[in-house]
Image (cartoon, rainbow, N blue to C red; front, side):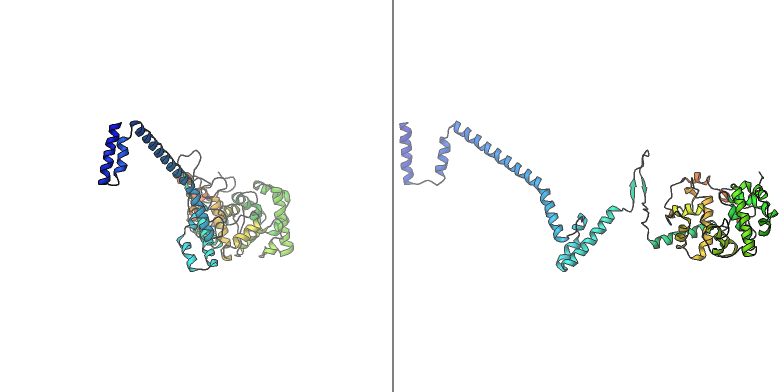
Length: 407
């Protein structure tokens, strides 16, 4: 101990004569530090480093957790500054055009583009051009083009409806009324008899009726029981007998035995409604009219020309889509198509010439080969409904219907 003190004293004396650099006093304690003190300091340093690392991790985690909230708050504040409208999409908020607008326009001018772009973006997101729909029990999903009812403008509807009529005119250039007749009287009687039965059955029945009662005077004076027996194959023969005899009496008493050529006069006759009247006007007098029968009603609703169910309202709605001069032939085209291809229970969609224009495509058989087997009359190679069809129909491959009792 004494030697160490003396040595230490010697060192002190020398230091006074030539003072060492300032770093020397810091190095001296390191040399005299014991092993225990060194270990204690190292442990303390490690703990401090560990605490510092833990603090950094906690701060980083906190910053990460707060980042989304800050970003959302920042976006919200930015959106509020840009546009007061609620429900604006992120695409609309980040639009470059919108960011540039505040420097160039007033507040009113800034709000309008923001609302417009927001509505446009929302519309694009809500109604995609094409959508994929998963079908149950089918492995792959099928892609469909949505055709929502009412999504078509009035102009687009008119164009589509007229295009359908033009397409049908090319498919059925020989379209005609499918009731056999030689004069207006025969046509009006045949049309009355066609209720609740086929034109084919009427055409097979009227030859015997007109052979026995060729004029309104003859039928007006006929024995109802004899007429009933002739009309029995058409169904509802008693009611139909009463109608045609009453019709004939009205023609004799009020119109001199002639069929009138005006709608207001025709609808006053027994058993004659607007449908029958337009058949007579269009095909016996050449005056335009729309015939709204069951086929016509079914097809115009499938094509979404109208959603009306009342025949008079259907007539008005469809008539507004076409020029008046097209009404009669339009009726023939639609009825021909309804009887041959677009059937009520199972349409032959795969063989339909207007499939690309039809919103109801897919309701029936879409396989082309299977659809061909569903075609009727001349399209399927079968006889038509008239015993004496027009020559144009025969030239196109149509086959006359057989008379009653044949085959």
